Length: 448
Image (cartoon, rainbow, N blue to C red; front, side, top):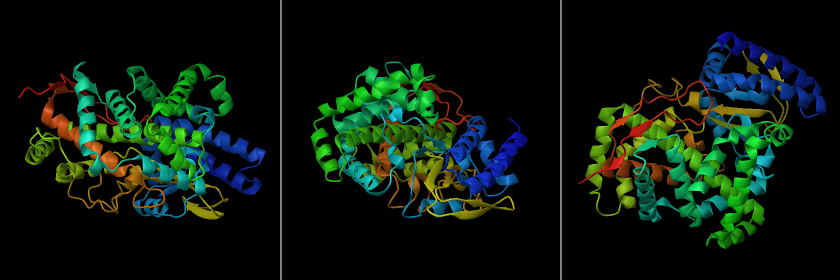
């Protein structure tokens, strides 16, 4: 797809926006226009997502129109302003894509798109369910080691396939005290991989795509029912009830927390950290030296061990800057507005989607010197990944995710080895989970 096509589709979006400003975006005609505009722009984004951002940023302006008439903000300053806005009004979007098929979520909204008291209750439930990593370091370490040991049976780790399986299994044991079967783990990874199917309208989802989605939906329903066997389930129900959340809301939001926010995000970040360290031999040697300094490999690691992994933590932060697992954050405007796009004043109605592009913001030369270079000497105090410092919407699992990645580095580089790696490359074209192509061949436990 050439650059001219990317710009031509944007020009059509501008024409649609002027028409919607006159007739309204939520009446029947307006909804049809928005749907047409959405599916004109969708293939441009999904086939050339990086060019989609940078061609429009460089040829139009720092703000331009995106999917579903959303206004995409690409600069660090604008993205930071959006991320830190409180309160925020959200809708049922996953990154830049709208979740049109609620049947994929058993009729429930995506937890990221809830608002008001419901959002406050779900967020409180997440904080209640997620353990403090300082208090569970030894348990986490055992689960990480178990996951890596399992990979030695096949002798390779394909980060796109195997890391999500490890994180799914780990989070279910940690949060629910449930040990999933191999079939259940595979079903969960398949469900995560099929999230894109939920972006098509519900009618198409339930008819033309039914054969593709049926197994995913059945898996979700079956696993939600399995959660009832958890020794922690009753506690979660009682806690949720204190925020007026019913049983279905509690169980389904626990599912989303583990699968959408937890397993997908953490496995993407972990895969990218492994990718960075496999690319840079000097950096890998320095991280390994740090690990050897802080941990003897015999006694179980504790919170102090993780706190001493200062270089490893900077590698995680710099990886999250360059390769953020979440590339887009959404909110809805709470009042009518007018925005200048490419020198044109464009009016928009209340409820227009405002999108922070974290990928471009994290590489903004006005914020970061040599923004495309991997440097661990940066200040990460205002990093926008994990939703920045916004206390209303920042990631509840940030500390846990970082601890898990540290422990995987600790064990992988101390207790395991691999013979060779495939070429490391992140896909800057097809919009998919943001992790590199990387296979660790000859993966085995070290012999001391």
